[in-house]
Length: 55
Image 1 (cartoon, rainbow, N blue to C red):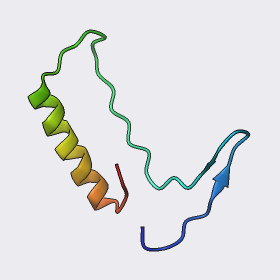
Image 2 (tube, rainbow, N blue to C red; image 1 turned 180 degrees about the vertical axis):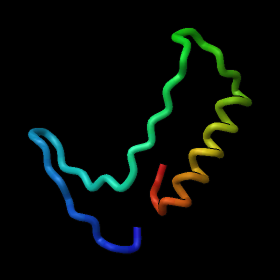
Image 3 (cartoon, rainbow, N blue to C red; image 1 turned 60 degrees about the vertical axis):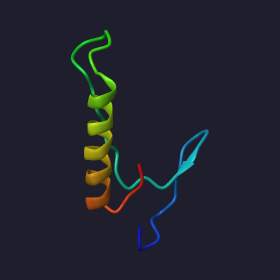
Image 4 (cartoon, rainbow, N blue to C red; image 1 turned 45 degrees about the horizontal axis):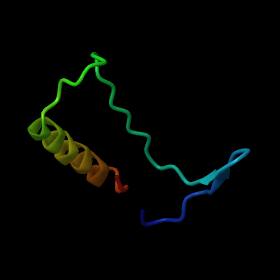
């Protein structure tokens, strides 16, 4: 994050959010293996790199 972002406040928090990345699964039971989770982390880190933010 090269430039200073505006710091926002809520009732009980202070934050400077650049990106809100949400991942939702269709199933409530465990469907992902460790290999799935590692690959998803790689993808999300790549997306965060594109947006110049941290995961």
